[in-house]
Image 1: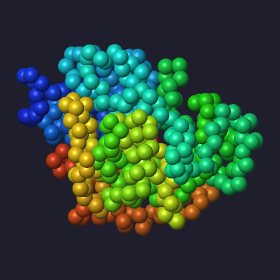
Image 2 (image 1 turned 135 degrees about the vertical axis):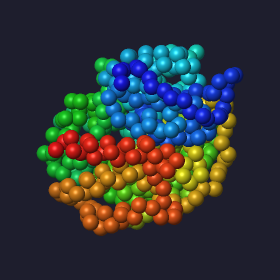
Image 3 (image 1 turned 30 degrees about the vertical axis):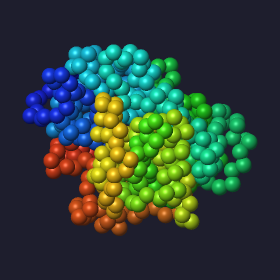
Image 4 (image 1 turned 60 degrees about the vertical axis):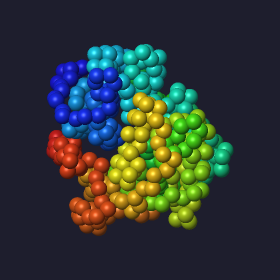
Length: 418
C-alpha cells in the first residue's frame, strides 16, 4: 500500500450519529495492542473507526472487523512534519471528529502541533503540562517522593564523569532513559532500559545513552511482582479505579506484561496513586505501575498517561476505559464513579506469551540476580489455552483476524532472522 493511501470496506454497523452521518474516530499507532483495544471498544459501541499506522509496519488493529478505513502515514518518529500533514489531510477529507493517539510515537508530535487541529478534529490527549509531567520519569519520581510514595533510589546523570560521585554498593543497576521518546532536531530518540552488572559496564552504557539522548537515569534494581493501578480522572476527581497483578512479562527481566490478573483494590494504593495523577493536573485515563517487594511494600516504577498495553484486562472485567474516554471527549460524558469489576480474571496476549517463551528459551542472562523462569515449567503453565476466567487481548472469536495475523507475523519475523 502506498504512503497515505487508504483502503476501506463497507460495514453494516449502526451507532452514534452527527447530523446525517456516524461520528468518526481515527485511532493511531495501529501496531500497538492498546490501539486494537480502542478500535474494538469504539467499533462495538457503534462509532465509525479508521486506523492509522506508520507505513511498512505490521498493524493488527487495521485487520479488525471494526476498522472501516486504513491509513498508512509517514513514519511519525523520523518524519513528524510529514506525519502531521498526513493526519490533518486525512481528518479533513474524511471529516474525522476525534483523533486518538495511542503511543508516544504520535502523542508527542500531535501535542506539539495541537493548535493546527482546533477547527479540524478533537484530540484525545492530555494537556501539554500534564503530558510533560507524566512523560518525564525523573519528575514523576521526584513528585512521588514528595507525597510519600516509595520510589527506587534514582540519580540523573548528564556526563559519564558524573558517575564518580555515585557510591555504588551493589549491582545490577538500571540504566534508563528519562523519556520513552525524546525529540532531538525533529526526530525521535527511542528510550531504552538496560542493566549494568559492573562499574565498567555502567560507564559504557551511560556514555552510550548520554550521547544518544542527553541525560540518563541510574536506578537501583527493584525485584518483585508488578502491580498496576488505573483510573479515569477528570476535574480533579477519580473514576473507575482498577487494580491488577502481573503474572508474566514479555521480557522476564522487566517489560510489558503478557499475562496479568485482576485483583481487589487496595485503599492505600488507590489514594496515593490518585494523588500522584491529580497532582500532575492530569485528565483522562492513566495507569500507575509498582513493584511489590517480598515484604509487601510497593515501590513506584512509572506512570502512563495514555492507553496502555494491558488495557484489555479492565475491559474484560467490565471497565471499558477506551469507550469512556471517547464518550468524554466527544460528548463530555463522565463515567460512573465506580463499576464493580470481576476479580481473578486472567488476561493473556498470545504474541506476548510466545515472545516470553522465546526469551526464556535463550537462557538466564549472566549475573542475573534472584529468580528467573525456567522454560519447561513455564511452558506447562501456559499450555492450557483456555479455562473459565481466562481471556485474551488479541485472540477474539468475534474478531479473529488481528490475533491470528499477529501470531502468523510472529513466526514469519522469527524465520526471516534465520
